[in-house]
Length: 181
Image 1: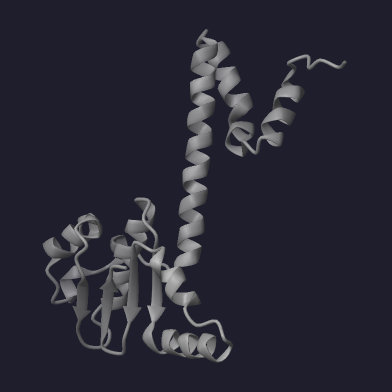
Image 2: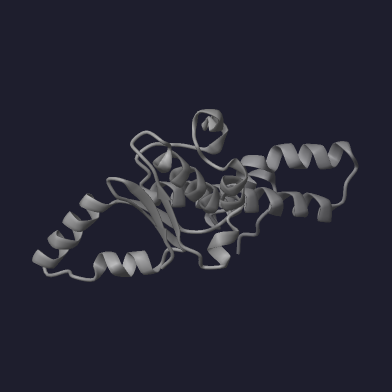
């Protein structure tokens, strides 16, 4: 019967077997730092767990951002409030994502180029970074997809996907509406 020696290589192999990529990526740095500060095994283990948790959190955000299907990457840091007739305090309140918990609906209305989509994507992106699931739809594209799934005999598939979301953002020609599912 073969026993593991507990060497660095053995530990890395076990971490890889368990799909602990965050631990694998930070192992050498954490072990070196723990030795440098004369830390305990518990310290090293805790730091490895934090690294794994961070890696998984970041991967989850990346996956949810990809699934959201934003037409472009936007955030509030590049939104110019001085040129827009928008209440910055109200936008910042929405950016806190409290509306998701209170199940409020949001309708952004304004002329072409006033920043409705920019704000919707920014707020939805923030919600995703906070752990919520969101998706961005163009109304015309959504209607076409719903019609296509009906023709293909898969009616209800998109509705089931949308039911798993915390919020869905639907861009219409003159507004951007946030619907809670």
